Length: 346
Image (cartoon, rainbow, N blue to C red; front, top):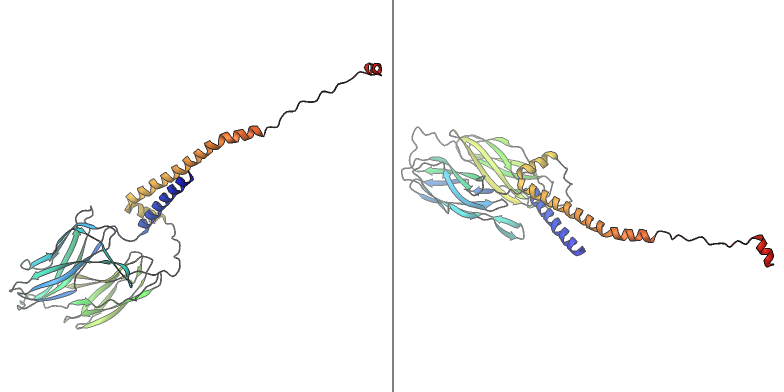
């Protein structure tokens, strides 16, 4: 009986710890990042191959996943190889420096530019989307397609500039709750000054520098330094650059390295928050039901075990009570002799 109880409690506790780990993990259930180059140059009449990749950052695989594009004239012949995955898997690898990390899934974009294509700059939008879940999770990536060759008509405005982000530099290792710097350059290779908005993206519980607006002179670059305070959550850093171009807002995202904060001291115990609990229940209804069922099973187990041992001990207690009752001793009879009988006997 004792061995079965220990085994049962071990299974229940293991289930609770597993559910707690899943509940507290910041990793989204579904999510991915589409990576493409920042800028691609091509001539009229030329065919070019652009390399891209998809990094699955979610807890689950993506299913019925495909790629689409927009942002270029319909006369351009664009082909994705491949453009559909029945299962977009999460691929992991390991090395002594980074430990376990996720590996992106590659794809190619074959762009055939017509020979009579007009020179200009296009914001080529690549959209990935899964169609199995009810949320239809999707994400996009935009790169600049510069077309050269044919003369630019007079009604087309001159290129105002192509803005890009240099290599993102971060420390080799970061520590939990210890600030570190992220540095990079914003490069304007165009012929006009450009005002850009820069922001950081990272794990939801990290503290990141607020977005900044910067004026980048034509043909130059501006160095920027952002700061971040990590938690125990690992994740990717990304720099998002937004600027207006020809009545269009271009949004460029450059993914940085995948960072795993190291632990120096034990983190502080999380404080209970009613708001956080309500938010968790709303976002994780199924998981909340499972936790409630496990708690009810534990309550039932302890109550039934207590009742079982209580019923077993009742006859023994009654027996002990009978044994402890003191025996009643009968009073001894004392023979009394009258005074006359005593004289006769004498």
